[in-house]
Length: 273
Image (cartoon, rainbow, N blue to C red; front, side, top):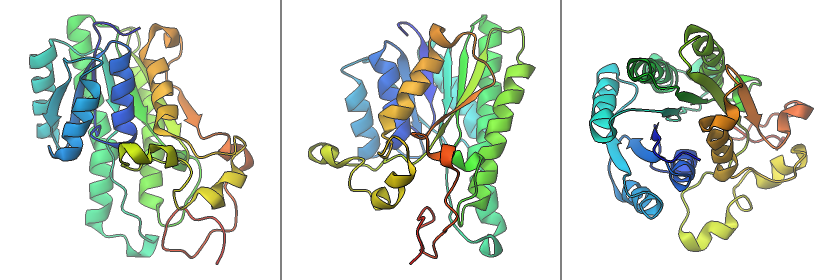
């Protein structure tokens, strides 16, 4: 489906980002992996992708820094020649009660998850326009864009802004053939697990028992659930969808967020203690 397409996925050494990169590579895309550091986790991600497309490339960059974004894209274009697909996935969450949030906490979350998305999208769009590419820009949002979770006001506000920005990008890029869409994951078990532990994914994460009854699909999401939506938005099948954010949460938001928020330290816990 994506043979010959060049795709850059930010924050893709592990978790949802890694699964997105893998799905794109399996479907023919030449993929660029990005993260803060190159370590054994990054190496593992690259080795997972290579059997499907050995043109996978590594790009170290902090997408919260605009100069680093410029270097990231220059390096990616040097290696692949052009960009067809950008997936803005990198993020940082710093769970804290509203009254305890410091300026550095706020800036860190916003710099990576909003400013970074904005300027990555801007650079990608410029490259696409200059090369006449009918590209795809996909932003990873969150169900927290639509509901409040304890200790996650900054993160949720940032994801809400990403959802709004996705609409704006679609309009600002009118006529250039660039589609901009988003995906808002719900509860996803994106832990870094060993291969022999994969059968436990979606079953043993600490919030499974508390949240599953609130999800109509009666299961926790997997990184592949989000990767499949991103894959759809990356292909010609989504050509007439633009400016939309698709919620992939197993139906969780259809019932609204439960009112009984917990006093637990963990920010997502639903039931009271």
